[in-house]
Length: 453
Ligand code: GCO
Image 1: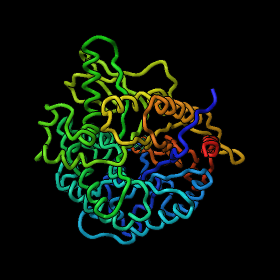
Image 2: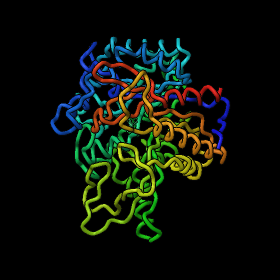
Image 3: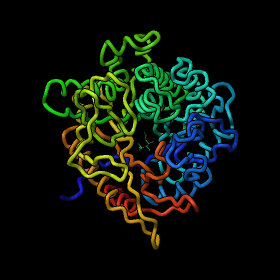
Image 4: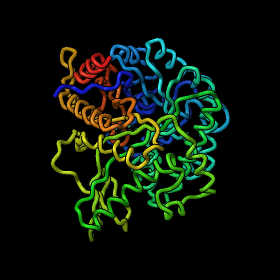
């Protein structure tokens, strides 16, 4: 099958996040974030790895932008570290922190690449966490203040804005299960962090608009939830799971309501009024997709686990392993059609209320060989993106309005609790020397982009 055609103005991009690539955690007045704290706690991150140096992007961004220019991407999705800009999360702004993003954005513009900025990719300022973090309603207001500061400085050059990245992961892994910073294990008591992030999102959208920013969306991760069987209890378990991981976050933004009254009832504050803010219309909606979920009814005596985290007891559902597909070296099943299915699930559910979509992330980790003669063969990564782009083309052919695809990730980087073992980049990073080597997937993606032009 020949590689499919995409609409002529389709946006080809790559993505990254501040804590995963920047390093320089103690430089130029950056405050501490919850990830600095989490990484310092023994046993939290594989191999004791931390983001203290990461891919040293803070110092090497000109080299990284040059690689992006040669790749030919139309846009680069990066995140702004809140603790660089507002070190304590509230109060004084750190001019040196803002200056860094100013330089990065200028470098991108000079390379003809549209800057696409995420405001929160999980690095909550530690001082705010100490005051309750996303369990506290105040954090939403502080987030909007920070958004206003960034918007004021960069509105003239940043072309796409995303206040939040993957709020479900922060709630589930950060506060409910404890696999991510801040490492809380609150179970369902973590639900207020969903509401407060969503409120922060809505307030930040308004603050960005007021600062003159346009083209505002969200990067939210979603996946089809397959029922383990046709049995009624499995189907309703899968529905319950999808309600929690998909619709709890998308419905408030796109419909201005929670997917179930039982969930709305668990949310703090003036929920009905907040939902008006949360559903402030967006210019587009961004989906991060990695893998589907397979879910069945809870079985007696089992201990359901999601990505290494034990779920609290008493849940009506349990995730099951997906068999019959290849797996990445991270152990994730490779299911390209799940991307088409995810897009279809959004178009079906929201119809006319759905703004244009972007795929704000998709990617895979393979434990690539070290470079030899300037080459890193990564055929499985090429196959991953090839398969997912073909699936996306089917979604577009079915009528979905998808405007772009951001491969995760530009370079190898710090993969959260998995540390540096997992490599998602199109560009290999030798962490001992910080040498960058474009992998075969980089050259493949450059050809795809080149042909599409
Ligand atoms: C994100 C992502 C990235 C991860 C990627 C691979 O959630 O936006 O978590 O930060 O590195 O998804 O796990």
